[in-house]
Amino acid sequence: MTCEYLADEIGSPHRVHTAQDVVGTLLEGNWAIFAHEWADPDGIDPEHWRDVVEAAAEAAGVDVEFVVIPRRSLTVVFNRAVPPSFEQVRASIEVIERARRAG
Image (tube, rainbow, N blue to C red; front, top):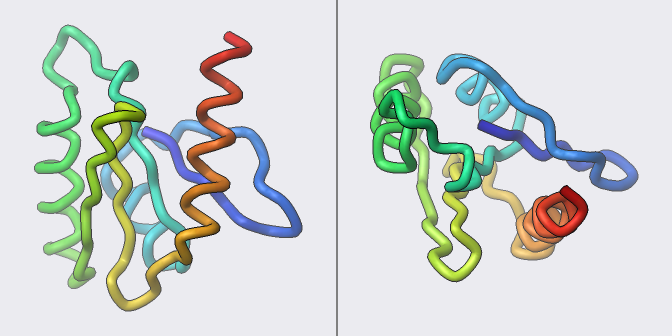
């Protein structure tokens, strides 16, 4: 899983390890992005990630929205009470795309 934080500029994507980490990020007004290539053979695929995050968010009382971007092989999740702007999400996607090209 990855979270993008927007400060003065967006830094490199970084991993968070649990669904609770993602929910904490959403509560802070940030969003999370799951790049589909991060799926692993042990069952963490985009659909499973969504199910786990959705259950953790529900348990924490956070109303979340998921947006799948098939052309980019990404799933974005955000807190509906504090949605990111289109520009913020687009900038996050660009960071992931640059990381993909670099590595």
